Length: 251
Image (cartoon, rainbow, N blue to C red; front, side):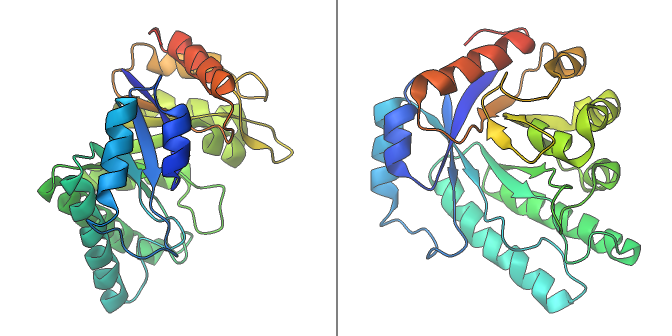
């Protein structure tokens, strides 16, 4: 199991907190220009300095699927460019938010599944594993109850965000999903959360029952990204040590 840290789009944050971790998950912001080789040397240098492997988080403000075929094609083309760039930097994984124009439109679900399959195939072309993240607590997020079937049909591995699962349906939602679909999970986002709306807080500071995660994922051999919104390195390391203990590993 590899434990990493999310750093958003900040190379400076990567330099500041990356060294104790196996990998850094670097975000690509939708409002930014497409990454180019001009931006790559600084990122490569930071990864080398911290001895981190690379994962990327694809833009999350756009949806994966719409009812319009031309828009869906454009989404895949856009992500092709980003995944080609990620592959050129030897990224291992790319996180994709599971979203749709209207996630409650049952007629759109076959299109969502098709889009996920297309994007996963594009990632494979560049040796980047695309993992689909649960965001069912958000307006355009696909619900956990639907995501597993879509992911299986698309042969898409899942990035299970424990905090997002809690925000969608509490500890029961985490338990339901993992009890049936732990085999789909290739990548984890870990942080704590509270029902009042706090999220991305250090593990132990919120209300998530990590015993549920241990029950279903002990011995997990994928990748785990600490997604705590802080630049306090000891705090990030503490969350890393806690999740490693939960999963039966060391950090």
